[in-house]
Length: 104
Image (cartoon, rainbow, N blue to C red; front, side, top):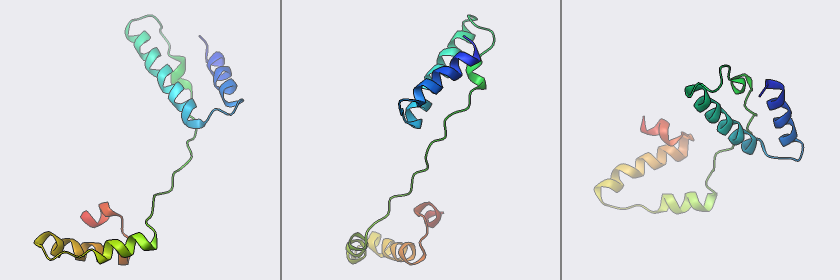
């Protein structure tokens, strides 16, 4: 199988509107298959290594609505864990930090 054949295959996949994520999954499967064939010494050059992965669209992070934030901030508890968690939530909400940044 030549590089041109693989390029034609992925161009044909893109034509009917197959999503970039689906094309990336198929490319991943082909990479694994050709890696196996190389390990079994069935093919020498691996043409799939020369293909670029399709660009995947970036995902925006999920955010809470005003009502959800109000519910979260109004749920204070007097136990020791709540005494620690409450200031963390306040800092998180007031600064817009990511949770990982706050924990660090």
